[in-house]
Image (cartoon, rainbow, N blue to C red; front, side):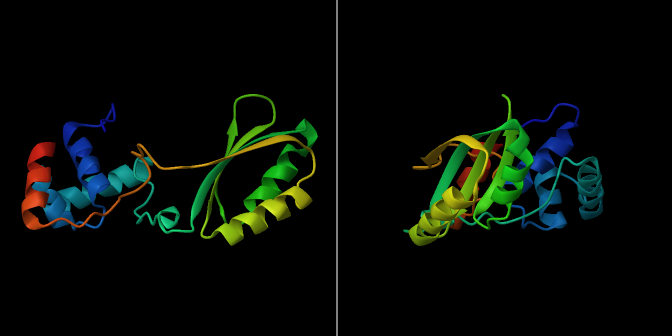
Length: 169
């Protein structure tokens, strides 16, 4: 990832923390050639600019045997748009709600930790949503690429980790 408008060092920092956001400022500094204090100052500035929005661990519940990740494309009646957004947003399994191009259209991403939760949600949704013209639901089979979805942690032995690091330089 390269973000125009940032210098090479800031882009290197972002690449390092994209791979492992749990590294200390000292460890990041070693990888990009800066002191711990310099890394902290740069990361604070990137946070203030809104480039870094947070640090988190991505947990793939869908990878567990019963988890289900899904998308819904919803077209609402124009006057019902805000009510539909409010209703959908109340469900804990809804992760993201996007307003997309086209009149009164939503793209919703959900993640149910079990098939039972998924089924309960869908029944409740059909019962509680008013003012919807259409809903198209798609289950995610698997993720092919996700550059902005957080850090995925994979255990490696030291030799594999060193080889991966050398390949990225």
